Image (cartoon, rainbow, N blue to C red; front, side):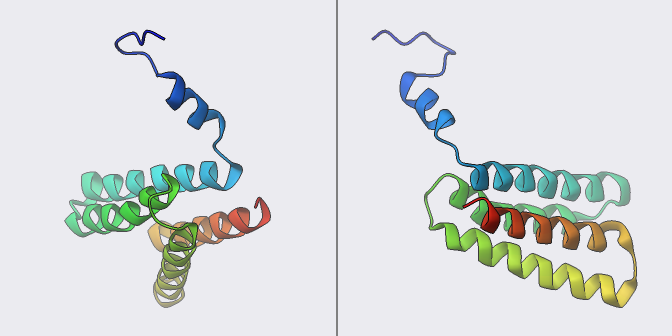
Length: 115
C-alpha cells in the first residue's frame, strides 16, 4: 500500500475507529481543560492557569493514547474534582473552580458509565 503525504495511514485510520466512548470523553475533557487554562492566561494573565492545565493534561493525554493505564486518568480526574470542589466551596466562584469541578465530575461519571 502506498501512503500519500498528508494522509492518515491505514493503521491510524483503524485506531481512530477503535476509539471507545471513555476515550472520547477524555479527549473532550482535555480540550476543555487546556482551553480553560489558555483563557485564564489570556484574560487574566494567569501563568499558573496555563501551567496547571498543561501539567494536568499531560497524564490525561498519555492515558488517552494508551501509554499509561486508564486508572491514571480516573485518579487525575478525581484529584481535579476534589481540588476544584474544595476551591469552589471556599470561594463560591463558579468560574473557574465550579465549572471545572462540574466538568470533572461529569467526565468521571461518564467514563465509568460508558465502560
